[in-house]
Length: 316
Image (cartoon, rainbow, N blue to C red):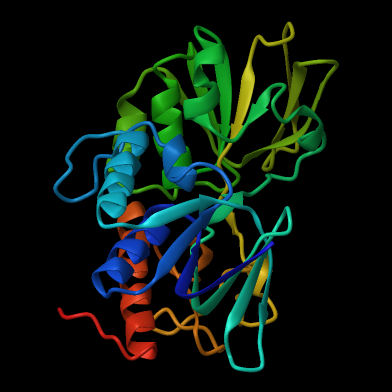
């Protein structure tokens, strides 16, 4: 089923970038629809605590995105539940956004705000035990490891934040770091060092995991000594949490945009791709910092750029 409406703008993704773009598009009186395949919020919903968003000193990811969504809806923003399967262009430089189930949308401009998905660490057995001892979300699964040891793979900000969150539940939190240092911000490193539940293992990787229905064995490889240490226990007696980055969800527009080596979309400062009328915002973009505030900023810039592209600039 194809909608007969020709929208000024279709926004794909209802995370901070998409919702911010929708708010600014609404202010510019652009006819807009936001398409989201799950619940509004994206990766933000997995964040238990947000304490670096200006003006909101302490909140949860769910509460923050709920406030954003309510603000957008109060401005008349429409969010449809839809999984986009493809984007194509027409001879008159419009876009057709096709969704699973046969629905499609027509638009003069598109903002891709599809975010990213967790990157796999790549050790043997990882795929086999996802949801059965291996997780990519401390908020979702931390409670299952109350008074049990957990192993956190990664040394960046996300890994540090999630490791600190896991100390609420776990008896011990072991950080598995391939390099000889943590890449997280100094304030986070200081918190890790002061927490007696946290143990950091530098120059160490997971070589493989084993088990039956649930994880029962974990093999740690010391990169300096080449020593392998086997951690074993009853099914469900320990868990592995992987935080080694994100994979940008850019597949939809790879034919219309340039991608960097990670698969993130390269845009100019106006969030524009090489295809007129196609813009990107948030974690799907190639950028130096992926945070809620930078996603929201991208969305505002992208919507303002769309308004200008369509001849309806937003007043400052």
